[in-house]
Image (cartoon, rainbow, N blue to C red):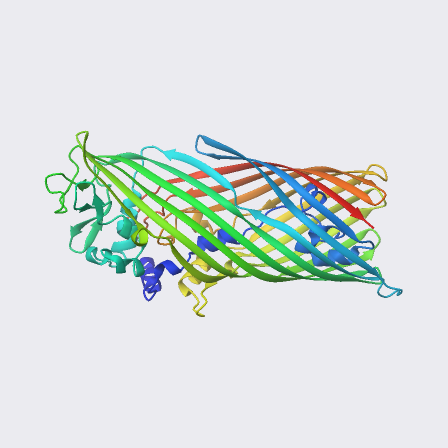
Length: 537
């Protein structure tokens, strides 16, 4: 029944490659702990505190706390280690995390002591990650998934996958793996016609093999903030922020299988679709390139209430970021066929007749709601805690022709659930010049249990069957601050642990069969050193 529902939802999409998918929207909507060094060293637990340049992206009421103008810049050096299976890759990256200015306008009024304005640049997310791995003794092939889920379920016939017009109507993963031109003339396929309108992949009874994968991601999400805030009787602080976002994401994803007793076209009947597995072997792979760029806007409102000198309570909400997006994609596949150790042929095919394809669309990220509380211990210490609710199921996708992708909305609601972020931080002032800080934050998983336990049939974009998601993200932080007259400098250390899941393709799961896929756990350990230089005047 579930497969029928999915088929109905997909029908009527004349240009399937124009639509991104649910996991693409999730990936583009993430943020991470970045900002000024003081902000990072307390794990971002500033929702009830304010008085920091990073609060413009979190609780804009924090701008109302300022009594003096502030100018600062923050640099960071990231040492990222990513482990997938037994393979670990390491990278080092330099970033400018934050540049900002807050202007404080003092008023001769007890009811409204000051009105402030600010401009900041903040790096919200770095997409940089590279990992590789392998899986031995695979029990299924991506080619079988493409043949079944992309073709058989939706009733796509083999003759419909041939010709240039097919690129406008059918999944590229199916087109590039069918009717591939060989070095001997004629064509073969990673997926093949077995009659009765059905297609089959390379894996069948008696087949065995191994798989390799490589994922290389690059890019960033940056936010430029314009904020205004005020102070009412030194008791209530209000803030409004307008954010302009710039996003760029590039991914290079490669997947390869080496199969023994593969179901390929044999040499004697090379072009008659005779599928055999008598001493045959196949080495085949799928390459995907994706480049996404987008600009967006959002609004944030915040409040901080100070009922007593020792207690601060904060609240904020962030509208979704409304993006205009453009994605360029390219895909290619290859197949090398062997029998009894002798090469039969080499074949390959690129998507869209070998050219990139670009599409434009709109994207809406989740709503965010935040509650905070902080305690001020005389002139020596601060203890602060934030709770943030991220409504992942409210993400949406559309296009610039006012079409909303109801099928993607359906899957967003089915796959994702709210995630919860808890941040705790503290600061101890050793003397008027030096301060010590520490913090911890955790972000819970965004996916429903049915995704993690392979209960749901996962639909991916039609160029790349793979998908990935984060389960939990932890940040352990500490830092030190120094202040002398109007000058200040802060140093932070952040250790980030991100637990993710990579799936080369979804599990084929219905009422009559339950297949396996190729999947792996991915763990990031990111060590960041951050330095802020600033001046208050």
